[in-house]
Amino acid sequence: MSEANNDENGAPTKVLVVDDHSVTRHGVVLLCENAEGVEVIGQASDGNEAIQQVADLLPDVVLMDVDMPRRDGISATKQIRQDHPSVGVVVLTVHEDQETIFEAIKAGASGYLPKSATLDDIRSAVKAVAAGGSFLDPVQARKLLHQFNRYADETKAAADIYYLLTGREREILALLAEGLTSRQIASQLVISERTVNTHIGNIYRKLHVNNRVDAVREAMRIRLVEPPR
Image (cartoon, rainbow, N blue to C red):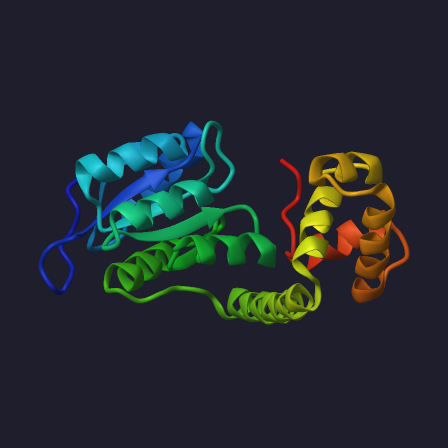
């Protein structure tokens, strides 16, 4: 690695580059090494390696890919931010959809860059995040705001419906999401199948749906229940 030029504050910003594609990773490393005031101190090819490298090297900023084997970048970002809050993460990915950006920000990333980013973009993002700030271009910022507003609406809807449903109805809705039949639910909860169906009817009414599939779909849409794993 080439010796980094110091920035106006003296010490260069230490960067860890994470990407499972070696050609892409080396390309990002070369860009960083040509950015004034930036020093690449390590590389990793997946999320698990990234977590270990951060612990060993303590970079200022991690440039993190999203889609990687063994452990993806969003999961790794969350772990890194929990273990090392002072280490900033900039997501560097081909994905430009608002859902991916939003999930990365929720995981603790402070910036987003497309893999088509220029040298100046990378340097600006790294410097901003290292200084405790954030970096999003205006287009991505608008996408993120849209996604945040949608998430807020869904969260409010989930909260409203959560308190509208009884405890037993919430329990049955969760079991419906797992794919259980009325008979299976009745057996598991030690109640009659007729009682289960009465509760399911109440769930339909409160969710404004007419069948199990739509009930589960609506509950998942507003994050009232989690998709089955």
